[in-house]
Image (spheres, helix red, strand yellow):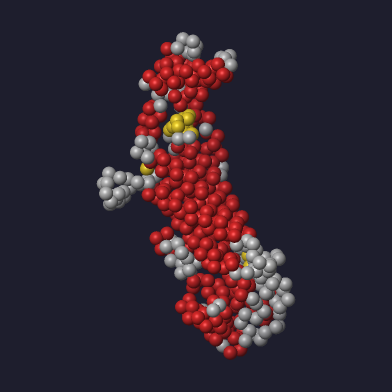
Length: 438
């Protein structure tokens, strides 16, 4: 688990934990310091060999920095002291030359954020592929569409999943943009003027680390970048929550159209042995709430005093790793949920039949309009017959067939109550989806 993160081990996967580990952070600090010395050497400012001596020094360990920080009350200063001691007497005099703490912190942080975003992008692409495949699998798995929680028109489960896939693809675009925003560093000195460190040093460091240089920094890189990253994470989390909420509704006992996979030894309730609860979907909902809170903190961190203060520092030590860790967990776990999701096609068909054809009311309405009735007149005819079917326990088709004033033939009614129309007309969505690649 990430040493500094507040997200508990239960929700931390090893790949993301490695990105945000305290040791990884210190290793990046050392790399920034070493690359800066390389640049200074190339400019002839410091003796040759200083950078090599620093690179060859053992990286201080988190517990060592914490112990020295008891004296310095400054973690980066404690790190610099220890690194200098290990690099040797000559190098010690040059380590951190011309730099301010944020040069190291923000540049190393830009690398961590880029690595974190790359992991998230990979997990998001995997989830997209899974949702897309299941969407194609269920192109013609017919079910009730619902609005306001009430029967609406027939749809297909594949069409529902297609909407999710397109939303995930938009999230991938947003996260790609957010990665570009946060993958920056700055080696421009105490208030960003380059007065004590030339731009060549910054360029060498950022190029070597594979990130961009902040074009106009203060003492820190601009925090709107971090806010964009956190808001993007929160929005992807909200997308997962939307999907999870739908699964929760469809798994309700009265609906029972889909359900999360249930292991052979799994227990749904400690008290009620019959329970099979949508626990992972509910977990996704809860974690999405966390992500929205982290996004709010990112917005609060944008407005720092003058060239900088450190009101953002303590908050970012929590929200940046935690948001990354939480979304990574959500993406990986939700992918497994979708991959193993049980789709009860027979129950979907039974629920459709239980509507007694009421979900085809719009098709009947339009058929009457096509025969020359005004829309209001047609609406009142269909509505009256629909209420009669609802209250009398009959099918809408039976009631319409018995109403001679309606004037629709058996062929007309066949067309109105056909699911094939839905399957055929929705094909365009799957054609669009087939062309979509991340």
